[in-house]
Length: 132
Image (cartoon, rainbow, N blue to C red; front, top):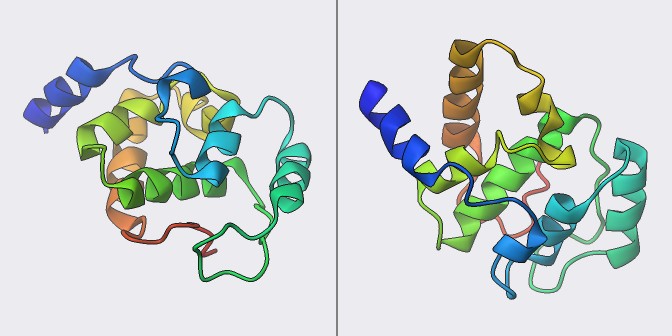
């Protein structure tokens, strides 16, 4: 576990804003990272972009918690295929609105456990990552 933590540490700080994402990164993921506001506003913004092209979802399911948002963002990163697990783990505790569920966890061991569980549980290949 220490070894994995050191690798994540190497990637710390790579994601500071939407500008750090590839231009062709998933539109929903870009919107989640760029969002600054409350959960209701994020759901409204995501509903406005509607179902994303190339996904199997006909509607946008609203998020019920910031934990769901972070979980979905992890799945979007995994589905993208260009990010290592360590890069994703380093991106999720960044001080962005979308990560507030994680950033509010004060205990580093609990934060690491949350990241490990949710990175393992997020679905690969799910371009929309709305599966709650």
